[in-house]
Length: 360
Image (cartoon, rainbow, N blue to C red; front, side, top):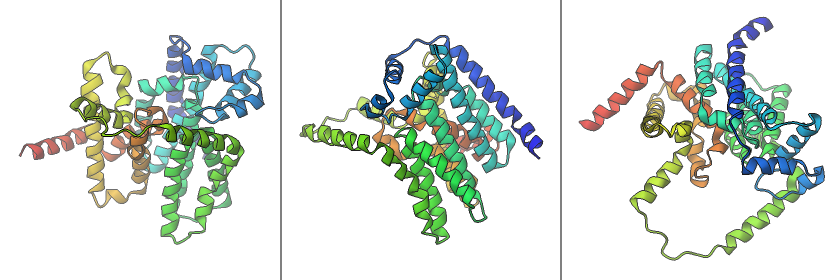
């Protein structure tokens, strides 16, 4: 049984290995930029200084980076980028495992993984010497665990809850954006147990948040600074006038998590403008068709993919342009198109239906 599972996962392992090689080649063409230099500089501080270091991020990543540079002496930039890309590839593998579990289709899961390993945006963020790679891995492991627990018809065991707690605590402590993914997954499980009339399980679901007490002094100081800055902002009378350009900019920023899948194609006008727009139309068209289909909208597997593919829609107004905090969605959006449609022609046919309806 174990050998069969290994053989089934082998193509996914090969694809993830190809992704790492692509990232390695990409890393040789990069120069250290400001935030990455800050990461390395922070990692050179003492453990206590890193913990007390005031930053817009939790210190977890800097502590892990310090640990890595101490274990492996004289590390160079390319080596560090390679480690980050391997960690990121682990996240892609768990994304594949999630889709395989939800769709029961190895072909569709491999299709989604193939699209992910050639995504310029995912390649870019995977090689950054920032917290994006460990955050992505923690997010995808958590989503994998949540999907298994949500689909499972039998009563959850102690092992299930332990796996959930470990994955959730890791996600919450990596960095603040992890709270968004945790919130989506915890709400999904809460709905399941509320429907089962097991309200006592809600405490177990949200209990990983208690782990943030480790960083309580930091959280309190950051909250104080945030409130001080907010109260210092002068009230603007009348506001700025809304122009066509500013409206277009707001729309672009709102949908940037879907547009940024192709952001590095900006040298080609079609790929930079037309293709992202067509992708967005096909994405939301497929979503509408699924939601209006009585049979499909109650498919648990598809529901999980929808939630983690579109959760950015709820949070984008508060995080304009911050695609890096929605990296799991960049994996699940194309995956949703694959799962929602039997083939590419079906997506095109659905698009034609909408265009014809609008014409008449």
